[in-house]
Image (cartoon, rainbow, N blue to C red; front, side, top):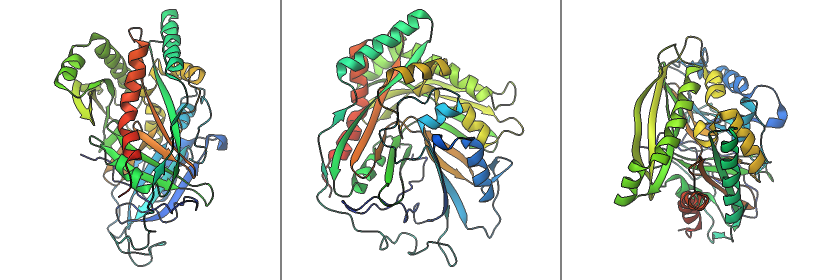
Length: 410
């Protein structure tokens, strides 16, 4: 099931700049948006909560029932990995390779109808959008580190674990490629990959500095319905074969890595939960994403009185399954070892509406600026990690994204 309503905006053909001015969500129209960058300073969690409250989506920090005549439907919310590190008081890491993408974006959508600003077409009518360009071409990929450099970083993490600095660190690599043509069909293919619970495309930017983010994430960072809050950490990967499933279920290394992150997520939720309400509803269930098996658990709690969206963002960002444990120490290792920033990946992307909050962890995520396509992938490193196997796992996770992007436009 796709938990994230796709947020899709047309991107004009090259060499024209990307534009998000016509962004719509499943026939909805954009009412207003908020952009924030780490360089802006301040508290982005409070900024987002106040912005969505002013738009009528939040009451007391959480979604509330909208008036019967309200035309607001909900808001897309994106938080970068750098914004998450900022909220955690940790080093931001290397600069993003896609500086056009802000660190926080909130886009509020309204139902089409008379008097709604920007309403130029009825729901489902794409006549206002530019036609897709033919001749999509993707150039050669350039990796931010070689397999040998990636393997060396794994060894560095194992040395940090041996010193007692950390227990686990998630290492992420990056690759980019130049492109020609309209990227939107390729980004839609990414968002539609099998197993994507949070499949969607978010666009934006001023002329000359436009951007787009496509997500095919299977992982829930945090969801709230009523006062129940849930996170579904994913850790542990094998090929989606019968043998791969058996290996994943039998692997002591993968299970230890997974349980470590489940404990971290329990602690994260405890920061916003009613005392004694945190529980593990499901442990180490095997799910499929594309051609991979992955292990997922479900951790839930009852929100404490007074806890709102800003508190949730501070508690869970950045997600434990893409940082490591302890989270702050892992972020320091990440900032030291990763040569390229995580950009649009390893953050949060999802939806805030009158029925609740549903944010996916932005793994399996692609970003596009006016010239290049960017992809990130990685994995959790423990003392038992084999450097060559970790390099291969990251490549396996990036493979479906690269394949979807490379497919010729129809």
